[in-house]
Amino acid sequence: MVGHRFAYAGFPVLFRNVCTMNTLSCMHQLQTLGDSPFGSLRNTKHLTIYHGTWPLLDCRGDWDRNALWVGCRSWANSRAAEDAFRRYTQFITQEALREFKPDAQFRKLIHSFPTLNSITISHVNRWDWKPLNNEQYNALIKKIWILPYWTSFVADAVFSLLNVLHFFPHIRRLNIFGSLSPEHYVPGVYPAVSHLQVRSLISCNALKTKTRDFLASFPNLSELSISLEPGGPLNEQKLLLDALHWPQLCYFALYNVWISENELFGFVERHGRLRHLALDRITLIQGSWESFFVRYRDLQNRPSIEAQVLFAISSPDCVVEPEPLRLFLSQKDLPWPFFDLSDGIFPFDLE
Image 1 (tube, rainbow, N blue to C red):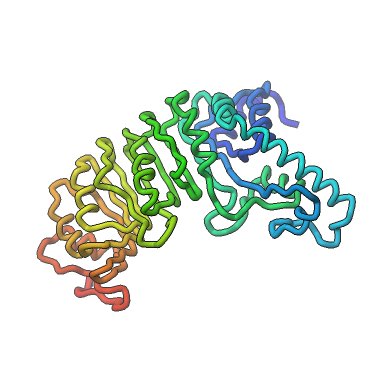
Image 2 (cartoon, rainbow, N blue to C red):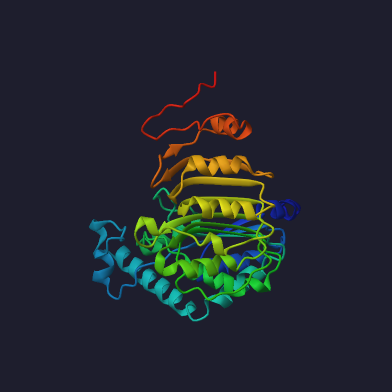
């Protein structure tokens, strides 16, 4: 047993970072924890919410024949299977009822964390295609014998959070790990958020205006990291960077984007406070990387840069090595140090 003194002392440390599943029962558990006599969640700084979508199956036959069913086939007609299907039905019914007021659930949850400053919304399926290793998740799967869909859409959870975010100006950092389509986004303004990370923002020609509106909803960003996911052909992974501006932006990371040299350089040039730029798997649809970095080298207040694999439609692709790039940017008489990916050689030897 743990004494009351130790409980009081340990509670604030143990719960600085809290994780929960985006299910009604898990949210109730968290609120119960906050009402503990040994303390509260007033010291929690970061909250991670894991989101998933489960199949809606009306009958037992559809349930145990579903591709996501994880029960033992030899138990398919057992009492254990009957109990698991009953628990599955209860779970689905409970989750369906909360769909009528998801925003209120998020508001009630976040209200339990008075000093919270950071929220992550992540799909339960991780990026390496492994299921979430989380006690709540594992317990739920053991109870209902069925997995959530592998497709990692998180828009429902993200938009429910955004609908109540204006009530919590102390939340400064928002991380979104999962496929986010802005198709049904209703524009708002979230001036308190200064750090935004979005992995797998779905982009295509049909959504480019919605994507711009979503990003423009955070006018006071100082750090921004974006990775796009195709909602159509790969060459539609584009951002309207010419239409976006964040006066306070200091850190900008961009991944999996198709863009022109002029648009990318223009974005860097007009963000005078930018201190660091990170690029990976960027495809230039116009211009060349040699030209971009020559222009970048001439910037008066040049941000530090981290670049990796860079592609181009009308000029050679390249894998950027940090030291040759550093030398190239520091000495104007050095030639471009990167050849095509297939060449694998540099035009000068660092030794």
